[in-house]
Image (cartoon, rainbow, N blue to C red):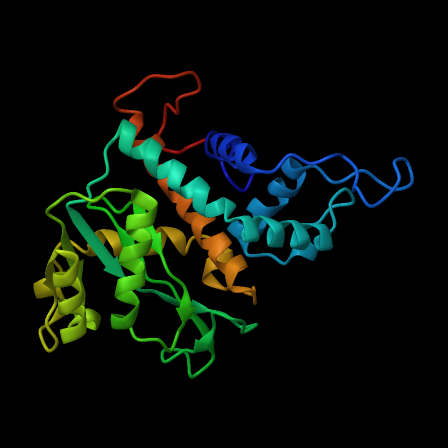
Length: 283
């Protein structure tokens, strides 16, 4: 059974492949015919997706035609090029063109996950007995489409990460409307957060400290649902990567898959195309 339905994998690969640099089948430092051909990018990509979905180590998803070291080297190369961020931006552009992004209401929230191997983006988790963890603030639109993502140590407070998260959302989604309302939970209830939002020209609906959460749930529940979707990917629930760029590579790759899933699901009621899913379960 494939890790990702083909209706998601194929459009993702089409955009992913278009951003990859053109390379020869052989490494330029070796004479032709004296070594094996370079493993195809599509082959490596088909190993990266199961690693993202299941959270498996590269040695477990490797095959005789694609070793774990090859997967690791290729991911490092793709992370340096920022391929996943560009694919996510293209997915947002397609969603905005076909469905429309709700940028007038932006919700931001953070999520703490495990990072047992430590690394550049890991820190002591306050909710896991001081073990190494990763914090993942996400900004979403009014329907929960992930716009911008930031990664940092689990010991970082939410409030200082609000600015980078909103900047990432603006960079990925493009031009923002004149009137933008930001929905935040009580972790962002601080003078710095309110000053930052006012400086950006946005309005804010921030939950107050000391008030029970169900009373002030507001419109930010969509970003919590987005976190739930992203936690469905094993590599995000338990991140074993040490390189910060590799961590961001997987975060944006998962965000691109979530965006494509929402696009296909909402487009089935508006458009018709060959291979359109006829059931709620994508195939």
